Image (cartoon, rainbow, N blue to C red; front, side, top):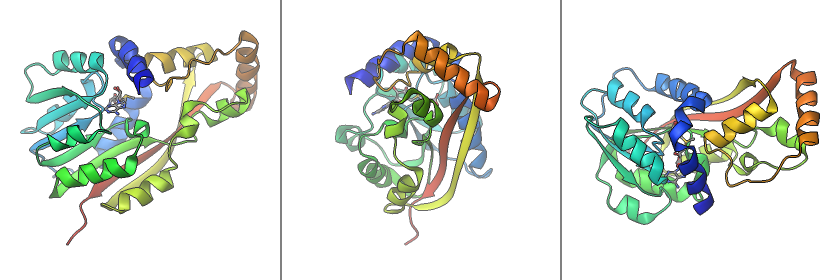
Length: 250
Ligand SMILES: C[S@@+](CC[C@H](N)C(=O)[O-])C[C@H]1O[C@@H](n2cnc3c(N)ncnc32)[C@H](O)[C@@H]1O
């Protein structure tokens, strides 16, 4: 998906300045991981600029990490950011077989705010199951289709988020390969100074999903007024699934 790579390439440099929601989701996800879990070989799928991969390495001493992202610019930032850490950064696509054929066995697969971009979640889960050792842990967060829903209704057209998988379907797909040990669905409300501020954040975090549709100033005013009337400020909702899964017991 070249459009997606372009969007994330363009976002790479300023990503961390704008990715507040992704950081909040990371904190929520990592808080679910059992305190006594101490992985030795991990994967951060969709590592972005590597800042949150570094948090993983700081948290789990003894962890060796493979950090993968499809965006070359994100990967080069991650390489800088993870210099001196026990990490290997790879530019690769989670939806291609070659990435998984070259993957060593892992006891921790982590992914924050990325899997909603997979074109085939079921195959991806199978690949992850194949590389995860029997006592390994798969922890991920994923955005659901109610993300930006109120904006999309006000605008009168779907945003790319409306194409994300239903979280219930994600859970069902996951159960084909894993035992789901924790699943939480949350709605995060984030306040923006204005609709324009939100659109800037979307662009700077690469979250446009290739949507370059022009939104007219009159639409911006109308949507902004309507959202402010409803919530009292410019609030945007993010639907997030937090999952912990383990290979099924034999
Ligand atoms: C919202 S960012 C999340 C980055 C980081 N995990 C974080 O939480 O800040 C999503 C990342 O997924 C990457 N990505 C999207 N599709 C991908 C794919 N098919 N394979 C690997 N990475 C992908 C993007 O390039 C982007 O860096």
